[in-house]
Image 1 (tube, rainbow, N blue to C red):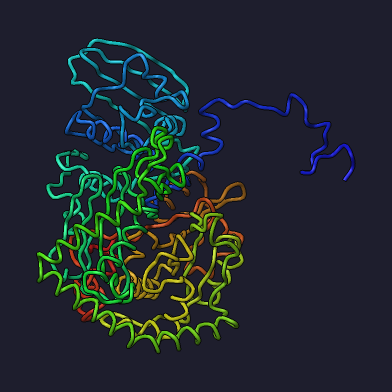
Image 2 (cartoon, rainbow, N blue to C red):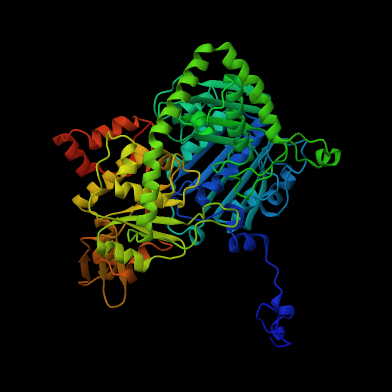
Length: 628
């Protein structure tokens, strides 16, 4: 290396005053959105950025409710514009503009004002403002309303007027298409988010597009709405100051399911509080029965909701999906006093006392729980040899496995799933070849099916280990008895849009719903949209996903453009495929709804072959599966 070069390869002569730049607050957010909202996305995934923007605004309204100000929050979605209105105190009128456009500005630095809030760093609404093409904030306090309107984070208009409106804050925003592309809100995701707020805040009413969302029984209601299978005993619901939890076991012999929250924030990736609950639950149960049961047997079939309130929580990212705090109080005063209670100890103490007391008082629950543990133990032992054989088989086959073209990277530095990591499940050599040649080998993997997979409807989990294709798919996903170590964040079914492709899609949906419903419930499963037509002339090419887009393309190009009808994925060249599985990839999420149970849904789609069923599937096949 020469003397006039730095160790990162830049010429020292280039490092001048002109090389130093100062970005405005909104420019930095737009340049590095991942620091503030995680990934951008187009709205297909429930953790895409547009939902984080909504969450940041609703969080502020929730904080007002928690502080005893206002019992109703109104949320409306019209086209791509969202409005959130609370009836709290309203932002102090002299600070309205600063609170939404000056970094590190807010009331939550004072723990006396917002003791147990999730938003403590004064960033949330600034990110919403900067990443919106249009942003409006209105604050009403005692007969006066301050109104400020922004475009791309730049203040356009500000006014103070008299008003008869009730006190509170109204925020409206339209996410910027320059940042999020051709995005769309999925109302199911919004409703799920708002229901979580209702479950965690009894007495709160949320009006969403005139639909009323309210919970009378908190986490008990949450479990009832999310539960698959039949509960083996009535839901146990315990409230202990800053710790609330509800749980039961259901009649399944694999997996455990958690919904965990910190100060009302849904920590989808768990964290310290969830780990502490899992550890404390197993320990308490062992001590109650005076049996050294296997931890997995104790928690198999367990579904639980856990909510804890922490002073100044520490999260592992700005999006607050995983709790990193190890103490119940992270305030400066507590740190100086050096007598902080650990979160683990707090959870352990609460569970030891309350769960132990509950099981002693409710002998029927204790008996039902013990029967479940013993049954899980028998099931585990009966499956042990089969699992061992299947693992050895999968290892041998994987040495020469041409079914999986894996990606190079699966985890980030914190061993969390990379948000963009994707596994495409496809069928046929030509389709597999096109996707394999087109993919980003760093983050996109391909699993190739050999014809139509087995119809697994009504079969036991044993078939997952006995069927070579299912066994290899499970090994590729790393989906054992739970999905905690899932190797791909997005699992995408990529089949032709013909009858055979639809059948393969249904068979795969059946496999996931039958054996890995948690993958679907957690929002990991998608259907790949691919174009039906290519419409082009010498100057321009359009890829059309339906007849309306085809007609619009023909009108735009005029004359007699060349029109190609794609009959299958294998007919799309690798170069073209790069467009369809790149940043503009269109994915339909497989969404679980509440109108009917999983068993009922699969019975209709994969059970007795009736004309009604055939007609329904052909005319109405969608990716939103109505399940409980």
